[in-house]
Length: 357
Image (cartoon, rainbow, N blue to C red; front, side, top):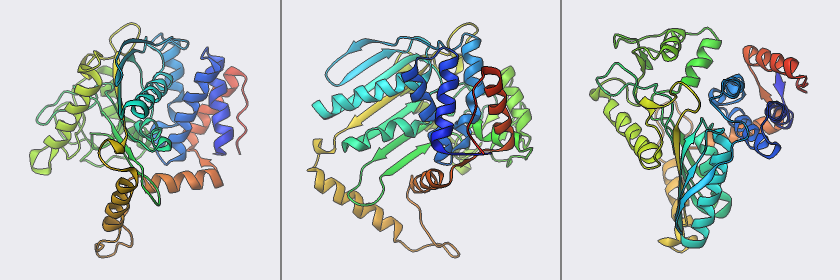
């Protein structure tokens, strides 16, 4: 099934409204989810819609939560998400960080008692239209093994950084601190494809190529899980990905007062996870034009450096996603059959028509 970005966004927004989410917040959630698909990140797109619906119906996510600021300074704030959906409170938090950065040069906002917020890059990129550097992190459900461990106690814990440039596209890094995300396993499971042995380990710590087995272990909180960026051994740098995941836990959870990944999603309402957002004005350090010129020089130097044999291009982070977005706006978003069937089922249940081919 192929959908235009607008049609898919309208459908997803209508679904959230129908299950009790206020219209303005439903629009934010839909925009974040569809942006993931449009940017070529289907692991975090509308394929997760049923999970949000189930989360609301099971009481994990409060559809009409009213987040509140519990502490604030001129450059910082701490927000209680009050078990609401992650996207609206994250949008509010990043917007507040941007306002503080425009007034004071830097703004930092933490969120606790929140839920899954979609792609981290969405929030980091909010800073770009203001000429600011944007930064976003979140901890997640425990899915990742620490180096030399066999029980998942860390989240995939993404990091996103968006930086403006003078010419061309911005630099946008949006990455998990694990080799892959849970959503990537779900994509492979939907397609009945094995995963590479470097992605995950079973309950005994051995490489596992069956995504459904790993996903089932996640549900049971059994041993096994995803490997940190770099893999399962120090020889390949797995301890570095493990360290990055710890940094995200510190910023998103211990600094905000949220639950660490290992203690998130307890029985009962709420996941307890947390987020960290920051916006930085480059003029704290350099005149804006000088900074943008420096960014252009860096990017051009890297892009024009000698290429490996057989390779015709060196990409800068975010380029592939910007090009995917342009294609999606021009040609629509192609959804796999299982995701299409799920959307049709949800639409039939709620009496909403998805205007897609």
